[in-house]
Length: 237
Image (cartoon, rainbow, N blue to C red; front, top):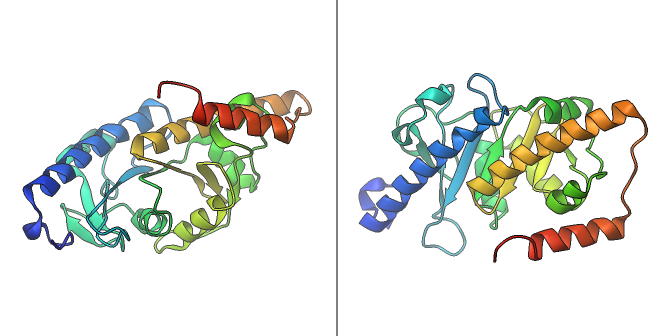
């Protein structure tokens, strides 16, 4: 089966594509609901795994470029290969598709990617400043500070390279691309949306805290303990 040619898809794979298109359309509604985007900015994508173990047949589902969130139906979602080429759908894919595709090609564990321009996280990115780990919830969610990635222009995979190079050296599922905004990753798109919500929350809280006086750091061994508990013990398993 050639995953780049919908005419060769099995009924099972075609159903999976439609399921993910519906899922990703639904998750896009969470971005304005949580106040993470304005107008048509931002995007959510999810990987659709093919049959090849090396990921060479994987596809991704993402929103089309410049389309209102009110118009993002499952049928509006576009399907691309991991080179960013359109496979299924109408209209041009999101302008950030190349960045998403690069992440999927180089981080096989990632199943979802989100990009927003949420106000407080983007303000830290505008300063080129990481968010220091001064909250227990940061230890839980990010395992340390939220790092800053390099400046990169939109249009090719430069942003994707910056995301991958930065997050490979961090436990954080979020990176603040300098002068641009946050990108988040997760095991699926929902996890990446959660990381986008959380990075905005901590960006706001730490900003407010710093305005009131010096921040109080958390010792690294406590951060490690928080992260281990939250990732391996907390919640239902």
